[in-house]
Structure formats: C-alpha cells, structure tokens
Length: 421
Image (cartoon, rainbow, N blue to C red):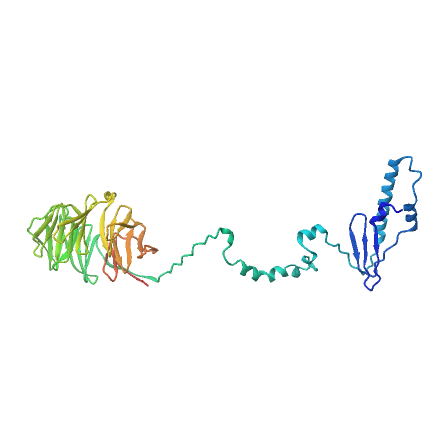
C-alpha cells in the first residue's frame, strides 16, 4: 500500500503535438508547461523501494519513526519539485494560474490581461471613458433628488464714460451750483457768485457781509437768500438789488415748483410772481420736493409731510428711524431719503423698498441710473440696484443737466457723460 505522500502526486502526460504536463505537488500548487523541451523526470526506483518498505527498526521508538518519516516525505517532495521540470535556454518563464481566492475576488480569469504592456493596461478605461461620461453627466440619485439651483446669468450692459475736466475755475472752492437751461450759477466759499453761459463767464458778483445759503432762478431773475436773515436779494442785468420785503427768518432754501416760489426757513412761505407771500405753513422744513400732484417735505424732526401746492397739510408719515433723516428726493416713482450713512428708497405707498450704503446729501436719476457721490468717489446703481463700479473721484456737489453731470471738485467744474445700453 502506498504512503500518504504518494496521494498528493499526480502525473499527467498528453502525447499530442502540444504537450501538457501538470504536476500537483504536496503543497497544493499547480505547475503547467506547454513546452516540448520541458521533460518530466519519473520517480526513481530507490524512492519507490523506500516508500514500499516498512521501517522495522523504528517500531521501538514511534516518535523517532514519525519524525524520520516526515523528513523523508519532505526530501522526496523537494527532489521531485527540483527534477520535475528542466528549462531550456530558449524557453520562457512559467506563469502560475490564478488561485481560487483571486478568482472569487476579481471574477474569472478573463478579467486579467494577457499582456502586461502599458497600452493594453489602459485600453479598457480609455474605451469606456465616453460611456462613463454619458452615464454620469446627469445629477446623481444619491442626493435625495435635491435639485441644484440654476446658475444666474447676469448680462453685463455696455457702459462708457466721457469725462471733460477743467471747464471753468473759480477763485475759491465751490459750495453751490445751479443749472437752468444753458446758464450755470456758481457760489464759492467766499460768497462770490459766478454766472456762466455755455461754460463761459458772463458776470462775477461779490457780496460783502452776506452769506449766501442758496440761489435760484425765478421769473428770469436770480434770487439770493441768507440763512441768518429774513431778506432776499435779486440780480438784474448783473446788478444786485435788495427786495424791501420781510420774509421768514433763517431762509435756508429757495425752491421753485411750477410757477410758485417757496421759502424754507423757520416757516414755509409761498410767494407769487411778484414775490409776495400768499400762504404760510408753520413747519420747519429741510427740503420740499414735488411728488405727483402734491408736495413732500422733510421736517427738521424727521417727519415726512405731504402738502398741496397751497401748503395745505394732507398727510403725515412718521418712521421709527426718522431722527437720522437728512434730506429727501423724488426719483421717478421712488422716494429717496438720505441718512448719515445710507440711502433709503420708499415706494408710492410709503413702504420700505431698498436701502443702500452711502454717506451723501445729493442723489439723482441720470439715464435710468441712480448716481451719487461719497468720500470713496462716484457710485452708480441701475434700476435693479446692481452697483456699477467706476473710478471717478469724489466731488463736493454736482448738478444733473439731463444730458450730462456737472461736477464741482474744489475750484473746478467738470463735465461727465455716461452712455449705457
């Protein structure tokens, strides 16, 4: 009867043209060869005799017998493995077959490449690239079917600025500018009045001991007021004349609306074409503007008062943050209120609409753009309140002529034209 080591040895011969030799050794490995030059050496007769012969001398000591038997098996297996295959110089190296564990993990042996070249190694990934892109180009399902927000595309409008500097220069810094038709009226810090026509000097007037707080054109006459007196002056053909009438004290502003003149001082007075007082309202207003068929005034305590043209009070709007209000403007269908650091926009129903940052006392609508100046320079917003960045420096005051913006920077005036689509 053959020993246990014999059972682990299997020799198969295939005598066809393609010889296949398979050896299952003791360790369970399989070695395969298809080369004609590879020759399997049979087991020697001495080894057979050793296997069939019974070790009589070892019966007295079973432990020595088992150990010697194991050593014989190991040496026999080693000799068989060494002499099983003979490699020629022209033969290639043998390849081991895939183990069962590898096949279970990677799949069958078809998943392995027959060649180890780099081209073939990346062939599958390159060929499947377009398929994978097409498969996963849509949104993944593992995001709980949550859709992403569509990206907002903002169309940038064409925007160009034409700047003409140094059209006129005064003796001192400019504090007031007014524009009427082709006439421009300037007042500097030394109360010198400059009357320009088409940016050329026509008259230069100086007032002694008279602080000019505002000027306006009414009935083709230039009117001048003082915020510490209750009198006004007028300029006729380049000559300054006093108006011998007593008005409200501390006149800060002269406002012309339609054919009416309003004096804003300790009270509000309505003057006719002959400069006579017609109506008076006992409210101290900072400014008075036209709003549709009525008037809106900002009082000194921050209340917004709605009047008729005859100064009849019809409405009073009070806001919680009214004490920060500095000035009021009407910009189309919106009302703008300037505070110390922001500009508040109110709709037709006197409801809050928008608030933007800006420490300014003047804002205007120029070609569908909101334009004003701060310490950082000129700020421009479109109708959707999207800011348009510019590099125009700050100015002290400016006026909107409709076609252009006339800026006052220190002693000079500049012309600014904006084109956008």
